[in-house]
Amino acid sequence: MKQNFAELSNGYLESIQKGIKTVQNFKGNVSAGKGTREEQLNRLTEEIRTADAIVIGGGAGLSTSAGLTYSGERFDRYFGDFAAKFGIQDMYSGGFYPFPDEETRWAWWSRHIYVNRYVYPPVPVYQKLLNMVQDKDYFVITTNVDHQFLKAGFDKERLFYTQGDYGLWQCSKPCHRRTYDNKGKVVKMLLAQGFVIGENSELIVPVKDNGATDFSMLSMRIPSGLIPYCPVCGEPMSMNLRADDTFVEDEGWKKASAAYAEFLRSHKDKHVLYLELGVGANTPVIIKYPFWHETYHNNKAVYACLNYGEAFCPAEIEDRSICIDGDIAGIFGW
Image (cartoon, rainbow, N blue to C red):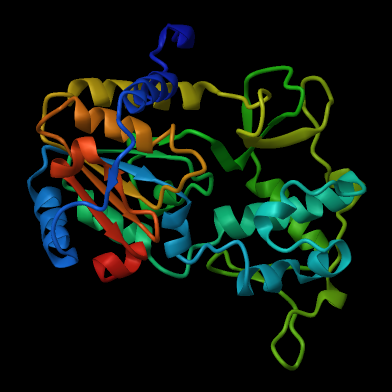
């Protein structure tokens, strides 16, 4: 019998609403946690060992720690031609650039998708994290769209990608609520530009004698025949990323949202570690505020915030919080 997805719990909205309501009742005082850095590290180790369950909240800082940076050497290697022609300074801002035509736009996006979704990160942070929690009762909620949790081996049934997936396309209209895997077509776009795909899925660029990318050997446009169009209405396809109200929450998204809601409900009175990794101030309502809510309303729960330059907690849960400032890989010694 076909499942009625309209009847599933929307863990995404439920947790956001609860988080906002709780935060509104806080006085606004924040803390860096109690104890020295070493004492907090020891507490974190003990909480990971003894917790009945662990809810991991993954933000952009986690992928940055794994080496998936959006600027610097990675950007220069794959996008130096776009930087020179359009003045784009990093991958993030390039995602919003008004390219002159679809051929150029998809040349950009095919590179962006592949190096952030299908290439393995240089630092095995996600694999190390899985090794740490794989024997625990865990669930992952993330605002990242690079799908690195799944690539590292995390259980698909315990993952909730709230903001979409670089590996999926949708109708830009959208005329229907379905998403489409894009790897095969993305690879064709890259090959058409002059890239080579290596044996370990790496994206190989032509290089000069000095080792720099030889962009004269690469095209900044794809053939018109590779531009993706919706198979239902014929409108252009777009990325399945939550940028506006056209974002498609497909069946997989709805199942994951319901699974997250059920996990929180079934563990609400247990010793739960809410492990927040690399979540910044851009979207606190999705992970940070709900984690504060769950910790505040469960006196057995513990909140841990690991972040570079933004490790803090509300004073209301200071006694059950661990705040460690620094690079995530460095904190764990990975």
